[in-house]
Image (cartoon, rainbow over all chains, first blue to last red; front, top):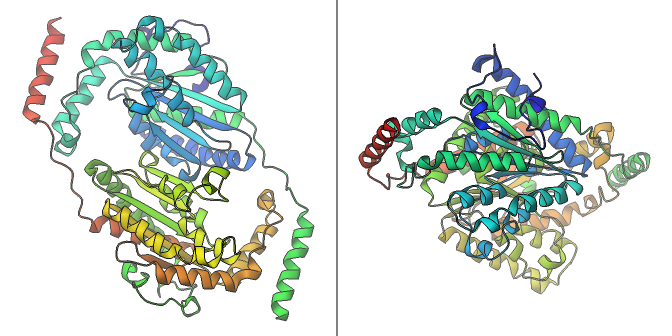
Length: 280
Length: 280
């Protein structure tokens, strides 16, 4: 199955998350059969990351969004962690700092976009400003409602500068979130992570779903598509994302650049150097 | 063998690189036997990186130095790439930008130091300012000669803020550098990388050696030791570095923090939430 097509939100379409099965796992596939496929996609990702670095013409921006416990950290650790860290920068976005909040909402995201030849991963992204901000009325509707268009323009700017954008919404259902919360409180090794604010957003599930649907509907474009990844099964999430990243990079048909120098001259220079050293 | 002790430059000692075998491979060890050891150290590194993130009390700074073709990029790709990219940032330092050059020499390095709980890797580091700068007389001797002390003070500052510092000098000999240059020109896949400036530093081998010896001698301290890694054999270099990073992290005796909340209260909250949802 081509997950690039299957999970891509068609630009202009209206997303209804209740119609999308978060537990989907593509028929006969299982965690065991997926493991080898994931490894192969990761290897491809690594090779193509190197090629992108060599080509030095474009960059890749991967945005991860999803509710609490949807698996953003796990996706980085188990899928995108295969990238060479020398060409890959992860930025997590939490509550804005004083300086960040003193600028327009896109300022801090723009600073973290990838340079030519590099990959940037956003753990949460500029979409927070039409998600948590909208759900909690942190700014008036007349402000957040304009942001969808600002976001599309921003992504167009990046795209026109040869930044390829992949946006993944990690889709879990309410029951799966509850199972993951339960696992956390039952595991003493994770107790250090638990905070008073856990579950705070859970009663707002419906409001978040509406906000996600709006963002997915208004901001999936040809140049910066959203993908809705069924994520109840972590292994399937990993398979789908590694597939989409690897196939997207491959579709760019990148090429190693031609040598910028006359290789024969360089060979000559090398031999002269060796002779001179031996003569010393 | 404990490579942490074996390859550490004793503070105050005078380094003579001609006395150190770049081809060392610790007796019976081979590429094949090393592979499993490296994997085990990487696994340990990953677990301890997570613990450092959880503990949120200290950070790790790894500096890689070495001449052309010494293996800085390879070390990142094959050893340090095992780190979770979410907590690990690689910064490469090339010719300073206009803005960077308009500040004191440590300014750009300071900006890239790791935040609490994180790992930073410097591909080339603040030592460039007493290496290439010294060899090419880019600043007068009275300027660069003061920098060793500035560097020691800077590293003391970081250490006092709980940043653990490991500095690796990748030691290859002149013959091995020549073999690696030869491999590059014989491999068409690497021709895109070749530039006119290749081999430009080779005639300055002796001057660089002197500059490295000065830096290794003057700036190996208890709080920020230098390690001289025999690097003619890439697999041995990888083994030694993965060993030192893993063992250093282990020696910190880090602990998962105590929960900041009453776990029973959280469990209660969880059950109330579930009941309320079911009652709806």
